[in-house]
Amino acid sequence: MSTLRPKYITFDCYGTLTRFRMADMARAMFADRVPAERMEEFILHFASYRLDEVLDAWKPYEQVVKNAVERTCKRWGMPYIESEGQQFYDAVPTWGPHADVPEPLARAAELVLALARD
Image 1 (cartoon, rainbow, N blue to C red):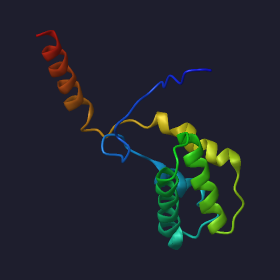
Image 2 (cartoon, rainbow, N blue to C red; image 1 turned 180 degrees about the vertical axis):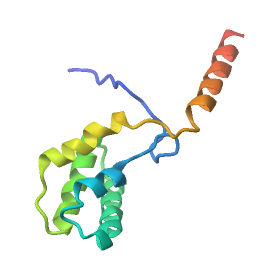
Image 3 (tube, rainbow, N blue to C red; image 1 turned 135 degrees about the vertical axis):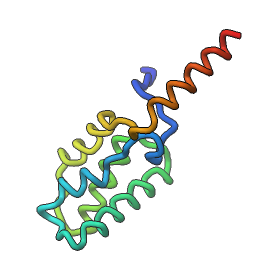
Image 4 (cartoon, helix red, strand yellow; image 1 turned 180 degrees about the horizontal axis):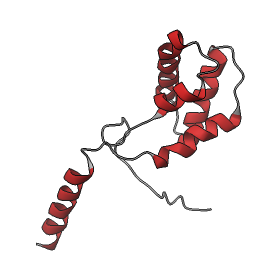
């Protein structure tokens, strides 16, 4: 039995600290298949399916994202392309924080370390 050892752990699951780019990616990836005037509706469905996926039994985030892309495509009557679901998942670790986040987190880390030494 292997032990899961995550490379990253975050408490920022709603984009508070991280500049979460799912909507940006969807706009770019589906621009040729979703009419511009309906793109925000498509984005809303995609976000809703991601939420729905995490409200059920636990599953790896990769599956959450891929299922949400697949369900959105099905709802919109377009084929699901596995590599597109994978692109969304692969992009997540490349997204950085909002510009105003690193400095306060660094200060908080220094404070925690100072308190731990005392």
